[in-house]
Structure formats: C-alpha cells, structure tokens
Image (cartoon, rainbow, N blue to C red; front, side, top):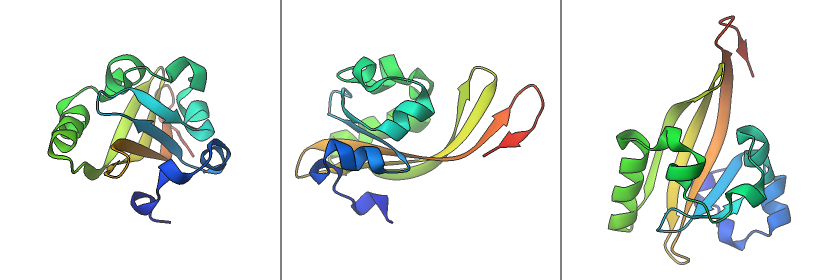
Length: 130
C-alpha cells in the first residue's frame, strides 16, 4: 500500500485505528488533529493527551530539528509537503528506528505523518527487537 496516496481524511477513526502503521494528522500550525491507535501504542501517548497539541514542540520534540521540522516547515510554506526519511527516535533506553513519510493533502489543507517502525535497539545490550 502506498501511504502517500491514501486519503486519510476520508477514513473514519475506526479505519485509521485498524491501520498497522502510525498516522498523525496535523494542521499548518503543527497542531495534531488526528492520531491513531497504532501511533498511541508505539509512542506511548494517549490520543486524548495529544489532540490539539503542537507535534514538534510538545509531543515529539525529538523531531524538532532541521532534518525533520525544518523540512516540514519548508514543505508547508510551499504547499507541497512530500518527503520520506529513515529516523531514529531516542526513547529512554531504546532507540526506535522508523521510516517517516510526510505529505500534504492539498484539498483538506491537512498534513500527514505516517510512521512505519523498523526495529528497536536496546541500549543496554546492543540487541535488536522487532
């Protein structure tokens, strides 16, 4: 499934929750407007606790850098947010590797982040879990 082409705005909350990837919808002010079950479990944040909050400033400050947030700002300003990158989330004693896909749904003026986990590296043992 090519997630860049999925119109997440047309999916019900139940359909979003059925996906086996993390999905976050956010507006041009970077406020979260959609957050699915998979992402809640992966990130460890309840949906109620993140809705309306700033994605990069309050929920995922580890992505508040030029590599991610800088590119998102540029894409939103240009009206053409569309990129993918592999990223390492540093979380407590773990490093979570994921592929991040950002894109803009021009019709709804909503921005989307799809998080596809790849692996978890355990810092204390060097082991890898999937």
